[in-house]
Length: 319
Picture 1 (cartoon, rainbow, N blue to C red):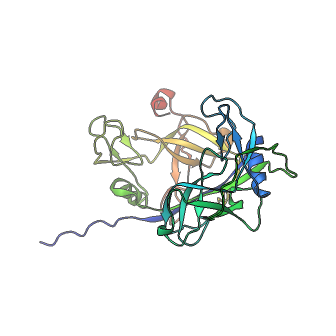
Picture 2: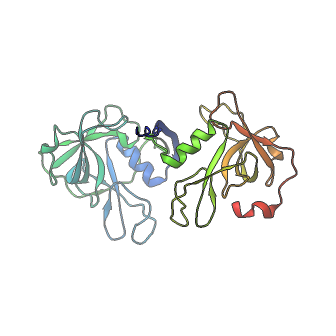
């Protein structure tokens, strides 16, 4: 007898990225502006501890702290790990060490990269110094990396008023995560059913809740879910939000509505966009159905079915 071939394992590369914009308080502003000027600042807590990078509140007493001090651009490695495969956007494009460095005059360590020829050249206790970036803008990347240093140790921290011309008052941090995702047995079946314009969940054998999308196990009962159940296609809006900010690379005009939708027969709500109705007429209890585009592998959006709204008692447990 010939064994059946194993099911195809689905895999897909995924990238999650967004710019995170934040304003800076006086301590962080002084720290980043100082980096732009080639100066490393820390902050002194109520017990005299010098923290680099600085924080705005004492981690022990939670008191607001503002006493800035200047520390050295040289320091000592307290611990390290070798990175033999640098990823895009990391400080160096050749193998390097991640190090925690206690700068001279500081009592805490700063995380950054160390440019070294190999792991044999790195050790706890080695002396290093800041290698400044050629162009500095007021960001942690103004420290290009650390490099080995054989010179004398710096002195104690000295008071600094934090005053610089053209202080940095805000930053934009580009957050990015790229990885290969494999959905597993339960979600593979869910995805394959969607390609046939069906929505399939799995029922817990203990509490009988139907999970859509399925998770492979019930998080409440801790048992595997193997009994597949087709739900929908229609459902009920349980909650929703109105989106007023246009997302990058998303060709949908604002405002639009994103909702949690409890498909008929499902034990929890999934999310989807609501179309075919003015955004200000969407409401809890609205009955909706999926709309598929030609060749689409999942519903493009949900639209009203024309049925009367569902009673609140029918979906209140799914909010």
